[in-house]
Amino acid sequence: MAGELLQYSGLVTKAKAMQGRLLKREDFERITEFQTVAETINFLREQESYGKIYGGREEIQHRGQVEALIHNSILEDYRKLYRFGNREQKEAMELYYGQLQYEDSVPKIEEGYFEKAWSRIEEFPGGRMKRVLREIFGTQIDWLNILWMYRGKMFYQESPEEISTILIPARYKLKKLQFQKLLEAESIEEFQRLLAKTPYFQGMRPLVTVQDEVSYQRVMQRMYRRTCRKHPASIAPVFYYFYQKEQEIEHLTTALEGIRYQVPAKDIRELILL
Image (cartoon, rainbow, N blue to C red; front, side, top):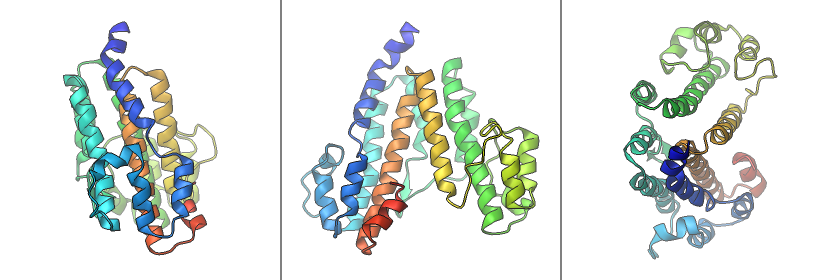
């Protein structure tokens, strides 16, 4: 245990320092009140986490330009943490790298990414590292599959065969029979009843509603907090920072879009879940 603390102390300390520079709720509340994109750009220039990436470039004036810099900021943070890690930590961070790519302001994840990452986890020699990676990636895989099944049934009335073509061929806490029953559910009501019996709910009222993205974020937040408590000296706090930074980028991109089209502040706050 002492060895793990020493091995991870520097990396985790650096990740937590970056976490401390994330925008706060009050920052987003202020942003939603801005009337122009230029006001948002000037505000970001003053923030420690974004000021440096501007590098004094006064030509950054448009939404597209600032979004490119915002998206690049997470790659800069990744590079800093990657350089700080040892070989095993770098290999773990390489698993996450595929989630940090953006195209046209949205995450771009290559086809087969999660399947490849899931299989690579088994190649790690340490049992502790495997447990942490399986918890993080496994929860994400299960919930992406749940949400894709939900959307296919709720919004597109797709058949199980059609839905199965977009699902990740891996499972974590969902048993094979549970997974199959969810896929074959003939109604949203049946889907939610079945979901309530899975380990993610254990009889509780399902979180999946029309606002299905909210459910995903709640589950991921709880998973990261729990994993970081159980394994404070591990790669978990680093991945939690990446996840929080991704959420911040998504909120900033949404706010910039709303400000550009003069969406009322209260509506922007609802869109970014404030």
